[in-house]
Length: 267
Image (cartoon, rainbow, N blue to C red; front, side, top):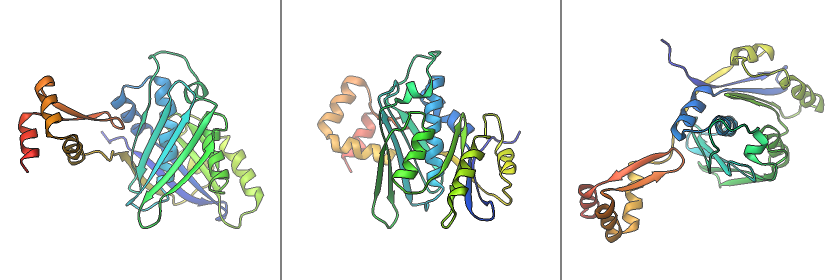
């Protein structure tokens, strides 16, 4: 059986007046939701933010990173997705709701708050852009960010498992943006990436795999243990049996027993 893969598709459309990006992120989003044991509505909200992060990461080099944070007054609290130019992505939420609870996207995200994007790494200086939440559905929020913070008006459609982004290219007139905004309204849940590409008349689209990736590592966990100090580390191991360093972003634990602590502090 062929392995299910998440992917980013990009192509120039409409006689090179606009760029089209289609994020097919269903497999990745299911993987992230499973890692955090998310409720359905939390998975939907985080999935939209991860989809936007995947689109942003498609524009940068492999040694650069994007971090997308939505800090709203909704049920989920802070929602965070991050990734790099190699399209390795991860995401998390501050808190979840009960499984089976019926809540729409705006209730989960919150209609008040802000969206923040941080670009770092590479040779340039870090960049941070922030804008107020437009509605709390992520779709209108990220569109507002592109228009206000980056001065790159973009038509956006987000749905469960992916999204579509159409951005007029330099020199395109206003009619291209209006056409894009109307076109994304025809995108809907259940359409495949290929169907969407065909609908836009995109030919020869670039395809890149999107996969899970977190910046945590055993080495970083070791540095955290060392910074806590030998006395604290040994006390935790003695009382708990092991010292665990937890990564909130990917829900992984790095465990250190007595032998590990001995090795670390004898280096």
